[in-house]
Length: 117
Image (tube, rainbow, N blue to C red; front, side, top):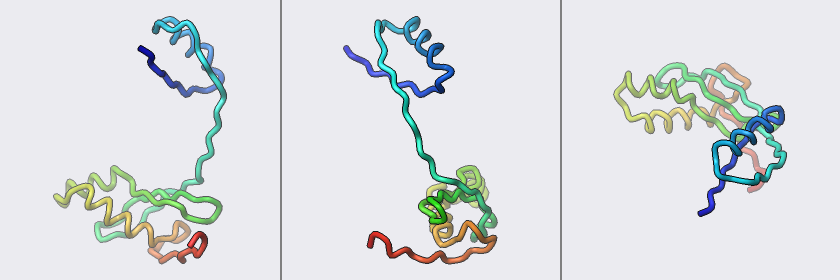
């Protein structure tokens, strides 16, 4: 049976990781290649919600907000304190965060882009 093992590591650890794989598995050969990753710029801001201040991660491409994501731990604490399902808390805060600018300390509606419509 064939098994595919995928490992991501830094270049300076490549030889060490290959030695481990050769020692700890039955393989007699490895394929390896360099890969690159592009990540969005991120900002974490506190926003005001009906539950109080919550940290939200804004993912940006240039100045455009592409994604928002409420911080899990903040949502978990609210859910436990208020005895509300975590998924409900996340959804409500997500809706508020989508209408919030990461460049403001206040909740401000962001303009809707006409690109791609």
